[in-house]
Length: 358
Image 1 (spheres, one colour):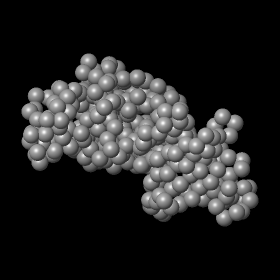
Image 2 (cartoon, rainbow, N blue to C red; image 1 turned 180 degrees about the vertical axis):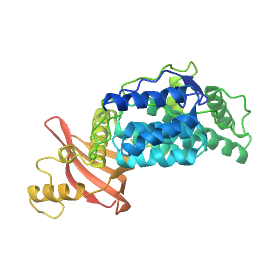
Image 3 (cartoon, one colour; image 1 turned 30 degrees about the vertical axis):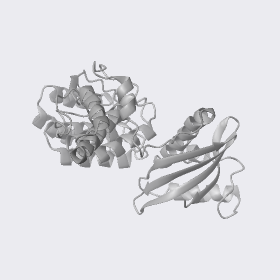
C-alpha cells in the first residue's frame, strides 16, 4: 500500500509496506488484510465494496473505518474521506492518525490553517508522533511562503523577504522566483497507522499507534531551516527566561496530558493533573468537585478539548498558564480564555487553581 507523508520539501510520496496488526479475531484480521491488499494493488472500487461489507457487521471498528478513509482518499473523494476521518477523531480522540490524515487532505486543498489545527491535535494527543511534527513543519513552511509572497507583492524591493522566500523555496524544492505564487501541492496521501485498536463501545487506547517511524527520511529535510520556518508569530510557548526553559516544557506536557485525558474521558488521568491542594472554584470540598467532574465527563457522547495561544509565566515552583480553550461535546461547543495556576508537587507540575477569563 502506498503510504504518503507531507515531506519537509514538496509534500512528495514515498511507498512503504502495510503493517496492520489487528486485535480482532483471525477472520476479521484476514478481511482487513484482504482490503489492504486490494488498496495496494489499486483495486479501489473492490476495496471500498469489501470495507463497506466489513463495516456493516462491525460499524464501530476503528481499523475498518480508517481503511475506508484511505480508500476514499485514493479514489479522489476528499470530502467523503474528511467525513470518515472527522468522525473517527470524535469517536476516538486518543488516536493521532485520523488527525494527521485530515491534515494531508486539507493540505491538498490548500486549507493550510485547517491542516495546522489537525496536526496540532495529533501532537497534543501523542506528543511523540514524529510524522505529525514533521508535517506541521511543512505546513508552517507553506504558510510562511505565502506570507513572504504577500510581503513582496506589497514591496517588491524587500530584500529580507526575498532572501527568506528563496530559502523556503529551496527547502521545498521549487524553482519559483520570489514574489510569485507557490507551486500547487503535489500528490499527497495519508499515513497509515501500524496499529489501531478494536472498536469497542468504550474505545481502548491503541497499542503504540505511533511507534512505526516513517519509511524514509527525505533527503531534502533540512532540520535547521525547517526549524526557523516552524515558529510563526502566533506559535505558543513565548520565550521565557532560559532558567525556566525546562519548566515550560514540563508544564506544556502537563497541559497536553490534561487535554488528552479529558478528550478521551479518562477521568482518573484527568483528575491526576490537579494537585491534592487544588482550590475548587466554588469552595466546595475536593471530593464533591471530583464527583461532579466525573459525572460531567462520563455523560454519553464524545468530548474534544484543544487549546491554542499558550502563555506560561514561571516564578520558581509556581506558574501562571493562560490559553484559549476549545471544547466540543454532543451538546455543547464553546471557546473561552482559561487561566491555570500551577505548582510543582512531588516533581510534577499540577493545577492549583483554575478559572475562566483573561
